[in-house]
Length: 207
Image 1 (cartoon, rainbow, N blue to C red):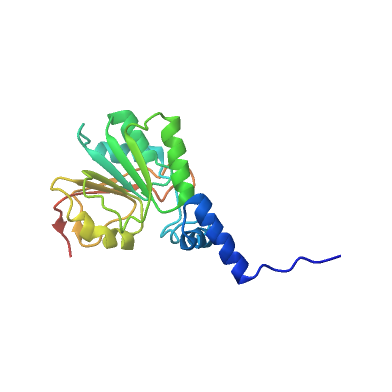
Image 2 (image 1 turned 30 degrees about the horizontal axis):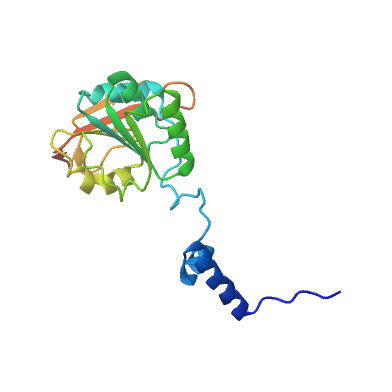
């Protein structure tokens, strides 16, 4: 039995040339398509924090403390399952943008948006919060870590005067909070979500 030999380089180039005539692509373009990497759902980089959902009691209190107006735009930086922007859209009818680097969280957020029928108000983006423009925000929600809050301060400080920034559990070293609220710890295992910090741009410096 005769075994087929491997195609020669000349045969490959001839096949590419024929493809260019039939499909309208140049051989270089065909090669580029063949070399294109497969897309994956992996994050562009490892998330900076492990996702821990904010208790709904805390979500509602943070939204109250934000003193939301009809023209506000709420950004949730590290949005998880999108509960902040979804709840704000449902309860206050305001526009919201959730940003998360983890594609799994983004899919959960999108499902949450669809199930609550707030697609006309809420946008979910897969992106790095440190590289994303959120300058239109008038309310910012955070549930990160203290060092990440500090890392965001240069961008937060450039937001419009009067912008409210609220953080679950963690402060922002160097910025004096306008308000600090203590909550009950909630159910067993949720005792860590009991402090809410609020700042208003421009905030007062704190040593």
